[in-house]
Image (tube, rainbow, N blue to C red; front, side, top):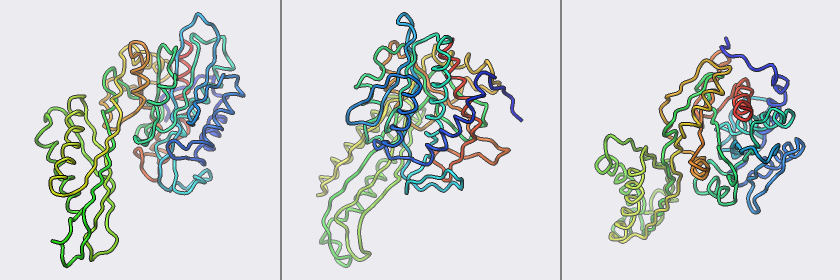
Amino acid sequence: MKNYQISEDIKYLEQFSREARRYLHTIPEASGQEHKTSQYCQSVMRALGYKITEYPGYTGFHADLDVDASKKRIAFRADMDGLEMPDLTETEYKSTHENLAHNCGHDTHMAIALTAARYLAEHPEKLAFNVRFIFQMAEEDMRVPGAEKMVEGGCVNGVDEIYALHNDASMESGSIKVNDNIMSSWGAAWTLDVHGESAHGSTPHKGKDAIREAVRIINDLDYIIAKQTNPFSPAVFGCGMFHGGTVPNAIPDYVQARGTIRSMDEETDGILRSSLNQIAKESALRGFNTSMVCTGYPAVINHSYASQRIIAAASTFLQDIDSHCKPMTGSEDFSYMVNAVPDKKGALFFLGSGCQEKGIHNYLHANPYYVDDDCLLVGAQIFIELATH
């Protein structure tokens, strides 16, 4: 049973929001390659009367609706990229792009933004702000320029406050989580390349085993967290990819491994990053040519004013509001946008997109990843409330 009531004013947008999400679900694209996605979103926003600003060489764009030069500007971010994995959902709107899927629900974020944008364009007299919608490329892959590049290009120039949401299908539709402090971790993706010397498996002493060296380095990283970081400051090290060798009876001369680090304070993030570089340097003393590249995001730190604005907007129609939630251990480059607005006046919140009654209860990046479309108008109504009050 629903414990919330969508405003009668926006119910007419239900079909529009569902059709937008389901179409976007069919065309997921890799980080930085969101060409079809961007074209579709731009076409919708242009038709609604928004002024489009593109970023040459990139797929991201922002769209402005100006009603009064004396008003402040509010911005909303929607990320556009999918994940490089097959879509295992069994729906009529399954991904048509091989090995690409919206298993983080960015199709949901875009549909919510488009729905809110349509309502605001059709009811400009209700606006308390001039409005900007930022459609961001490349949130998922830390190695590809995303929010940071859009900030450099001016996406938050003239913006007074900024908001974003992230769906979570482990939460019920009609619920949100937010806080007025750290909302996501400091995070980075690392790539380790180890070059050794190949040899026959029967004569390992004649080569330099890149697999053994890479494994040793990865084990050292676990040691760093165990012995060099503050036990009261959470830190996570993960290795998600490991590739090396071509035959079972040869010592490989090259291995690449990739993974992530996460932490909940800036000091720990610095320890982890410096340790990665130091470990790679020490590998050279054993005769290996080793490199470690690490790129990542600062934490999203919600501004108290902005988080209270979210709570006030959601309280007009929702009951299930967790206003003191724990931060997620995942990372979000929305932090670059928050950090670039005056007084860092911005906030991120989590929007429930699951429904136990419909059998929808999965975590981000799960495969298959299902979303309850009822969440679309919930997210849109919160954005609308923020823009009109």
